[in-house]
Length: 131
Image 1: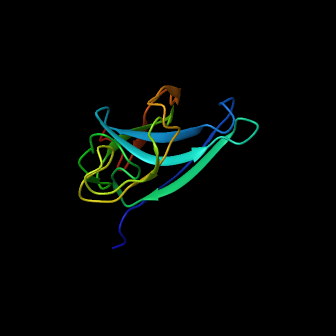
Image 2 (image 1 turned 45 degrees about the vertical axis):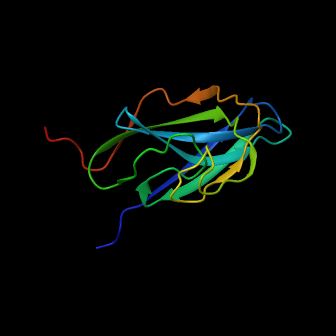
């Protein structure tokens, strides 16, 4: 049996040109994962894409969320926020990364993590609820 995966794509407009943004994924209304990153182009458009084989952080964060499998039913919501982390490689021991893994940091370096876009309703992922 093939391992489940989640391929996602986000395109946001009317952002600040050249600014770094993150894509957050909220699972079941409680667990937040930093799954994507990119910079808005000169017109203020951010395009980001990724594939997950489990819910887990992909970019440097201050407090990692415990990874969990995709299997089962989940409600997910996406958000785009300003990436206030510093730039450069994050390594074990850095205050902005999971100490067990190296996660990239390429933010604006200003500590601003303001949300710009949030999905209006969660999306149901996995088996449909029984009637």
